[in-house]
Image (cartoon, rainbow, N blue to C red; front, side, top):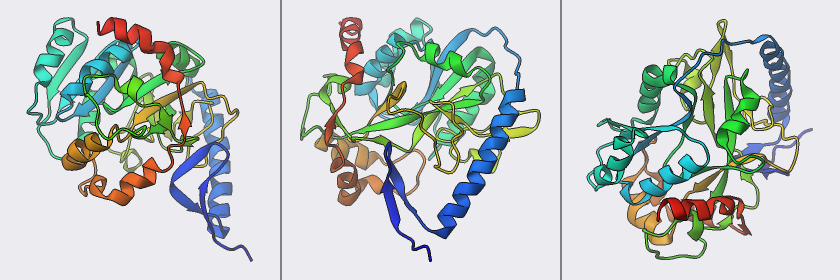
Length: 323
């Protein structure tokens, strides 16, 4: 008899939602493997039309009262190869306009006012509908997430390996407070926080290949930033991960311990930034504010045991860009 037990991590990942390792788990595993073979076969046939577009890589984000962090986030992603930003303002009342004005004037940022509650998916769908013809790749990130190419120095150089894939999932490396109660918010997030989870989070964010069609109304797209289903000839196809393996139901295959790219997720920042800002603000997707829970905070913080400096190769360029 197979007994159920909670599996919280494996060799490469820490699971946000621990898995029940029992008979049902094994059945789901084998069904998923069969489906992955099917999707890989479909991708062998897929040959989407490559059209010339204005931008190679753009980012879409929805934000609320993130003014202290916007400039660093934009300047950093310009360094790693992002061409343009579609930013959805969700009822901010800080000085975000002052921060964004130079980038709007330089046509690096398109600013869209989006005064809806819990409107993350709605904003992403709006971006896909309006701007997919302008860019080859659209990434969906939050302002506390920084894409870090490791094997490459440019996001686009990495994504060019996936031109016949509908979307690519990059994994989170989750960072905590690095022991900071307070800090000057004018300092660099990317420099102040170095201590992260020793393994990757199974959760990540997706870059959408606009050569493929997409059905944003599909139930599969409920959290499209995490699991983005593209469509080819009427067939919905899940994302591949950064190793070109199908990502489905959390049974993600990893080919090497050397990840070519990651997303630094500065989940808490300092203790007072977390409880003074993030916990008060809540979430743009979930109606229930789970950030206010001390146990939720420590569940992430107590896993931060290893220094990760992959982003540091970009810090000098970032400092010079920000004067």
